[in-house]
Amino acid sequence: MTFTEACITIGLCALASVLTRALPFLLLSEKKPTPPIVRYLGNVLPAAVFGMLVIYCLKDTSFLRGTHGLPEIAGIIVTAALHLKFRQMLLSIGAGTAVYMILIQYIFIP
Image (cartoon, rainbow, N blue to C red; front, side, top):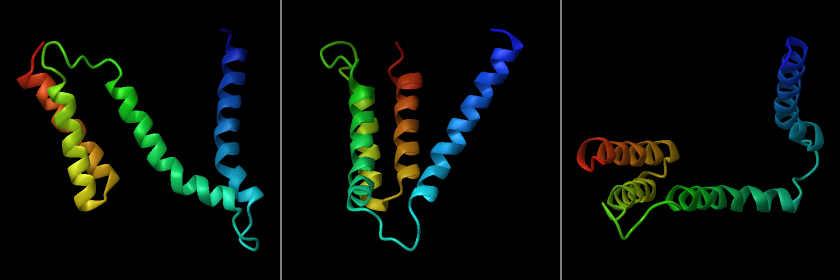
């Protein structure tokens, strides 16, 4: 990739990033009510994305060999329990990830 191509690529990426963040403010004003479809998506997409992430993370887990998915299950349980108790997404995901990483690095060493 030449220098010019790299500059064009970086510029287009920056433009796309700014545009996707500014577009909702340009299309939706404070004066008009939020369209029902946007409110619906705002309610269902966070849970859908979270569910998709769980499925993606577990897609290669073998529950019939080795650790039987114990580190993954422990991470999910910690994440779910903390989220149900505190309702803090960053805390629950961070703690669940930490538990999983500690288990695979120090307990269930491959």
